[in-house]
Image (cartoon, rainbow, N blue to C red; front, side, top):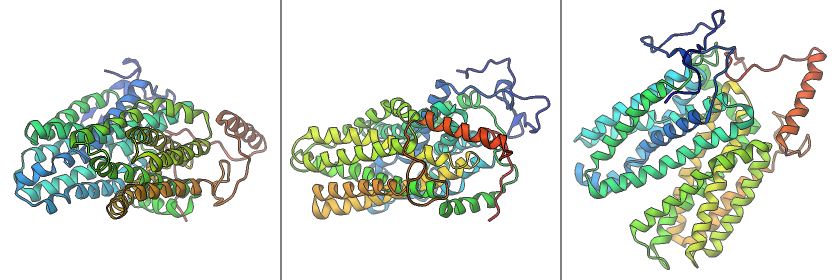
Length: 480
């Protein structure tokens, strides 16, 4: 299982201005065919893209293994349900910590070594989860595993950097679908194992899968130098804070994504209550199998990505927002009448939620190719906040007022996302906060051709130099 790069072809130029480290962690030689050569770009094929998706699947699964087996963990560690119910929150808190303080390192250090570290570290901690008999130790290890399970947040910007511009959205959508599949498969596999065998086998399995991924990643992930040559860790955090208040495209995307994530999370959390009560009265097993509907969203990922690749991202986001509103209305009208309405709404929300998430990310990553890890960290953090907000509010509204009121609330979240999107047009200037300027052209190729012609005119008039490639190290201005 190697990448498409010929083994005999080295990727390091003898006169490269970037001093290449030929060993991972200073001791393990980097395979010759994966070494960086600025004159010979790496080929980002479908195998490597799928590998990124699979790695994301089993990294994000670390956050969800415990959820179906909480009762068994309660019995094993002799703690009450109140205490054990806080374990998923603790793991999510660890993930938020890693998202904020670890994933931005993708703009600072060599991402190949960062990825290997973020697979090996949670893999090693999983051994402790498998064997410990102490609940405090299990809590500490769970928090650390959550913090280290931010591999997808390194892989998404890397996939964008490696993929050709014509298929960047496709590359992102495959990694995003891997994340969705990880949430699904963790709950299904952990529930099945917990039902028929010891819960510890879940963590043994997780260790084995992550251990298998280490050599596969080692022999396939290309090595690149750090993206920013003059940044320190402190400056990385400072520029994240700066981006959060000075970049209209980022703020628009984050607020839009937060509303959509809240609606999506509220729907799936309260779906359990809806299906378990009148008029359906489904068993826990049947309700669990409803999660398999998420497979439709995973299967549609390449098609969703290709659709976005043909459009200016704003227009893909607009299509997704309108479609999400339609499927929210479907659940308001039909959820309590017929199970087909629930299934249709679930499929539609899955597919178009993924389209919105990917298209917004495409817009955000275009802000600065050399800050994609930081931009992604902010974007996913707001998504995380939206999920927490949606699941909490959805549960409270459902218990107090029922499923129809909850569906109306999720419709409001989706309407919020559309409203935020419509505050800025597709071609509005980078630092313009509101309004439409530059037209409404939706064809990405036509827009890029127009920009190319404008750039050629500027060059002929002695304008600014063209931006470097997405993987070329550069010196970033962090003043201000």
